[in-house]
Length: 273
Length: 92
Ligand SMILES: [Zn+2]
Image 1 (cartoon, rainbow over the protein chains, first blue to last red):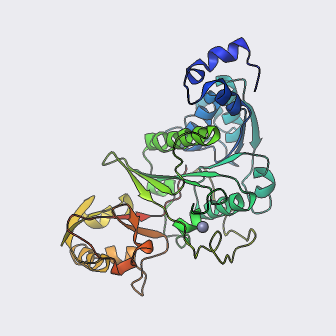
Image 2 (cartoon, rainbow over the protein chains, first blue to last red; image 1 turned 60 degrees about the horizontal axis):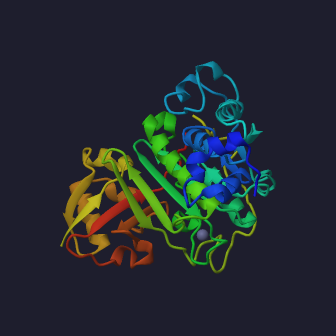
């Protein structure tokens, strides 16, 4: 266990006082490494809260720069950072909040060529990207590298959160068990075309952050095998069952995907718009 | 058999903004047909040309995915709630 400084004992006192966390749990968080895909709407609250929680190493990948139209929801950035790489802006905000946190920035998109090397260094992966090819890429890479994945997605007024760790539990599904195939290109409008309620990013991203901290601490019930669906207009959360598909091409009984393939548009689609 | 169908945000433009529709049907397939008569265009969003539920759309009866029940043949009882949950990818 880490030898806390007095400042750390004070900073993390509200965690340490929780029996489910304690000094041991806080020490675990400080020794944890989390990798995040996307420093946008979902990445903002996730990065903020994980930094505040004292997750010791946070890696964050995004190739975009901060744009004025991001600031309606991407609260980790600010007016002065317009034009700055998002990962750099995120690092500054996280370290200003908590200097304990080491932030590794990856100012590029994850691809089939780099993702396995990157995530092999981390304990937990958080997906807040904004396109299907990357979601499938991240899912497959996490499966091959045996890393738990907390996936969040949103669209207009709707959010989805799920945890995937098929390598840990025999009956736990992966993202492909939920959606075997992405929708055809062009069928799903992007955020800039469809719009997004800014605070929805906070609701969905914060659930991802809560789940990430629980997963790192190993406390409570995991979201693995569940899909949380949030409807902001009805102000309603639903928890649906998510089953492992024995026919899943990745984690099923007779897998056809045995290595990372080419994920169409994974490099061309932008994360942050 | 009267069941409630929850319409996700992306499909509400086809239902005049309604987030919940009550229709009759004894199976999931029936309900999809009833939805189509009430709001033309809904079926092709949920099903492919062969009438199968699309791979990027999940239909739940209460909290269970119909792919793990009997698919479109899944029997319904009065008061069941159907949810249509399309894949979404936004993180921005
Ligand atoms: Zn699977």
